[in-house]
Image (cartoon, rainbow, N blue to C red; front, side):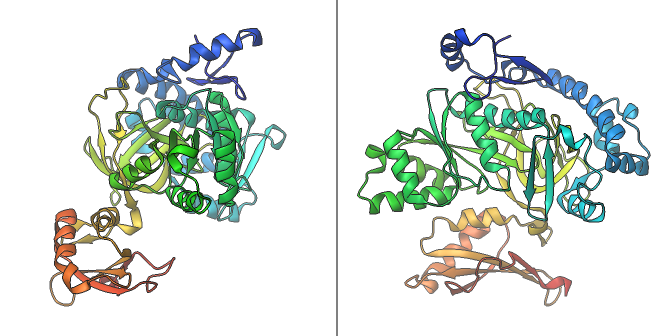
Length: 460
């Protein structure tokens, strides 16, 4: 079986097993062979869905046993639900009977029973890393747990086209939170040299990218805009002076038009990934760009945001995830709060058989039902994207008489022809959300950061 990584991370997880890379003397040949491989984890990524489901069930059973026997939180939760790990004989039983966890629930548990809320399932002597997320949430990892985190992202990096010869700049935070060190470890697992840039210092990023010939990076899309502005102020040409060829973005899912603009501006390809601090990378784009493939190290369920029941195959809903590799703090049936528009089960030209997530369209609490329709903020954002000079928006829902009325407040920059563009904006919104909406243009700055996305006056 071929080795899963070179460079900084010379072993990886395959179905829960760790494989050594082999003698150092063969590293150059190994790297050359690795670069030609289609998949990062071929034993898992090439599986059919029945094979992968069997693999997942086989890895899930010992995880449930471990959590029940070693984590007070899970023992209490399972007991309260009247289920034991031995009762889980299928993924269907798992989905029907095992309780959820949520970020809010983790925070409450850790506040009630400091420090880990009963989640900790190993002795503290076995811990290698502890991260602190807003809440606060303390997230402990063994060395093997952290390798599993890095592995999930390495799978997505490889699918995006990252290779051992690349030089990577990590532009996310290295302090307290997991993002920077996770991405750093994943790039090194693939075999890349890593520049640990971190957040801020845009000019230093530009200089390092230029001088070192950085070819790949993970960043939020807003960073690329700032990077471009800074490079131009320095008199640089993005396509000539920078050598970026593949970029990963996450956290800020953008319309395809915005991605295309980034690709054209930098002469690079951009691939989206989906993940969270608790779960690492759950979905990733391949070169077919037909949605984000679900990674092999998670069990992913798509549930109705209201009933919490499985949706019909292909429908969108809330993403619920179980990480199959976390031992210190198991994460089982985690409700992300993220809502996906649809899931594709069609075959992909890349050869992977896993379902593919469509766009992440919003958060559970930000998707109101108006006139019987779920209104997805992301659809409004995409509809407004082509209109220059329009910025933040807010949905206001009222029921002054018998029917619902949706008003979309939109910040308009000076110079926007509000009267002339109103009809076109209404038409674009109707096509996007399939119901009519009133338009209320407001001055730029009237909807500052932190303004509620949805105001539902029907609840007043």
